[in-house]
Length: 311
Ligand code: NAD
Image: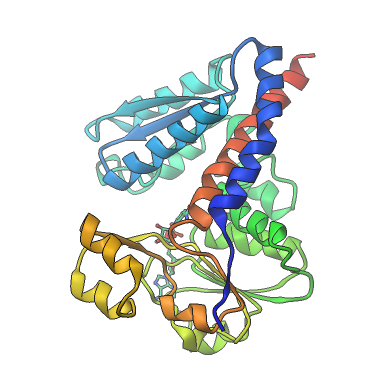
């Protein structure tokens, strides 16, 4: 039987609709809209698309998204100056540094930029203070993609307490924080990574399986317990028609999309998993739109907290 699709596009629209009156209240009280400052360095095409999406969603909601674009040739000091400016600005409620940063900035550039963000404006939740507070279950802001996953599960009425969760991937931005958040919600959590042995057997134990490894269609039906909930975080753009044809069944409408666009977004989960899983997030239309919605939630929350502090 085909899995229930967990529709991130629809749930994200609900979340944005629920935010509207809060955005209006903030705008009225502050005499300006809630504002998110984004620093985008370099010309990574995927990052450009993500930042444009954040701006578009913000505009539609009445949240001001102020994007500062710097060339990849900039120094780390100059990039830090932009973050300092956002920190000191009375008009910016939230700050986001778009990753990945160009390699020309050095191997620890992300860390260096995240750690100069004011934790009270850190709507992506990557400042060490917020990472530490997340470990203690009291982050000022939890990172957006893990928050998106928890919100999707909650709003789809998928119970977490006492259930086995397996997270594939241990990145700072997805794998580790989502594992902590599942743990706080009383799931029994296993984190797997590139050196994990016998991954399919571990994954098959999961009631809730989160795939966040960045390998297209890696999680095949043999990784999935029948009826499990599978959250596909991966976003992989495929351009090779032989790979796309091997992944999708003949007659799939997605083949037409590929023929029209010359590329196709595929998650970390193989399309055939839809026949084994009980519930599954689609790619696109699952975790992606939810992540942007949760960024807006965090930005509005940051604006509300600043207004409360000003009273
Ligand atoms: P990352 O490259 O930082 O981390 C990947 C993790 O997967 C690592 O911990 C690594 O150990 C593990 N891994 C890699 N190969 C593996 C293998 N063969 N077996 C087991 N584990 C393996 O990636 P990330 O930033 O966490 O992103 C993961 C995916 O999620 C990417 O496709 C990315 O584009 C996508 N992503 C989507 C959203 C969204 O909003 N939907 C947000 C962030 C990331």
